[in-house]
Length: 133
Image 1 (cartoon, rainbow, N blue to C red):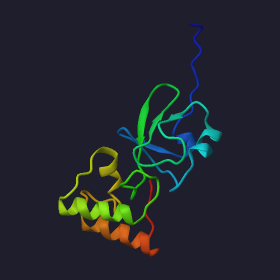
Image 2 (spheres, helix red, strand yellow):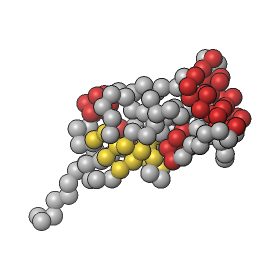
Image 3 (cartoon, rainbow, N blue to C red):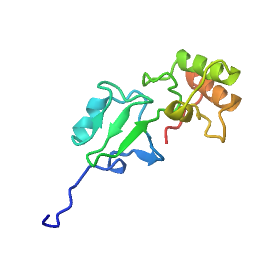
Image 4 (cartoon, rainbow, N blue to C red):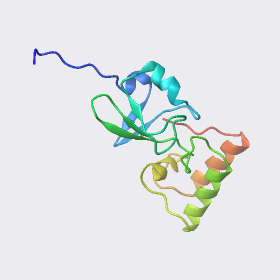
């Protein structure tokens, strides 16, 4: 080795934030093509839209799972299906794990509760925004 260090695109250079094994701060509905145009050394487990659960592999081999706050169904958008999933989780009739549980923290509080459900409802009504960072 001649002492040169390989250069890889960092998540922060794309405006993304990594914490634990999650990567956040995507725009809702962001296309993978738009990210590939900025960084060709990153690969994705899906091919169209960044969604909760999309696995992102950096050029150095590090893997992160995408989180879109409010996207509990893993389709990259926030709609009534996500609201239903949140209600089912709060009622105890379905479970949320890993990135999906993290995505349920729409109100950015300690635990997933009725405040997160309210935040999602307000987002769907257009009266509030869900912060993605």
